[in-house]
Amino acid sequence: DVVNLGIGLPTLVANYLPEGVTIVLQSENGMLGLGPAALPGEEDKDLTNAGAVPVTVLPGGCFFDSATSFAIIRGGHVDYPALGVLEVDQEGNLANYKIPGKVVPGMGGAMDLVAGSRVVIAATTHFDKSGAPKLRRRCSLPLTARKEVDLVVTDLGYFEVMGGTFRLLEWFPPYTPEWIRK
View 1 (cartoon, rainbow, N blue to C red):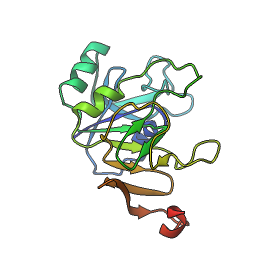
View 2: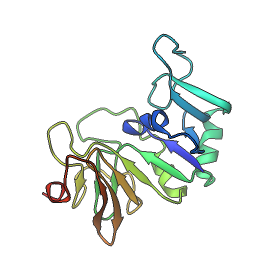
View 3: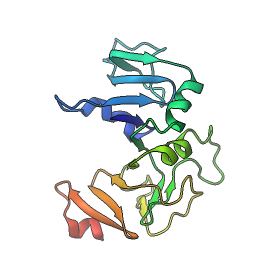
View 4: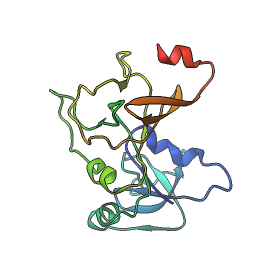
């Protein structure tokens, strides 16, 4: 499977793949075969993921231009995008690019990724910096995509978006399902 790692929390995924798991990680800035973060002192400023974090490339990895990267994305060749989010709601709506009144560099490839992928994963902290939950009944920020998110992974648990609700599939101690529901 090809997994695109979006900006934010998803950039850490490459650091935690267990032995024996074979997936091909893609970075929309033009890389297939993305590896874990570069070790301190071994960073190459010309080898970064989409979030500009220095990374490594696994054997067989390759590089290409932005047009080819988006041809891969728009051609339906990414099986699972893991996207950073600002908000996601119980209908699977995604807000991940704009906070009104703040300058943003651009929308990125999220709209293209969700349209052409089989399963969309939102990966985020459960709460924003102010303490408000990022999992919402309805998104309050401008939407990137409607009804496209299938799974949500936060620092508290693993959720499926199903039938207009978040279904808690797994929770991470010390949190309990009751505490997470509140």
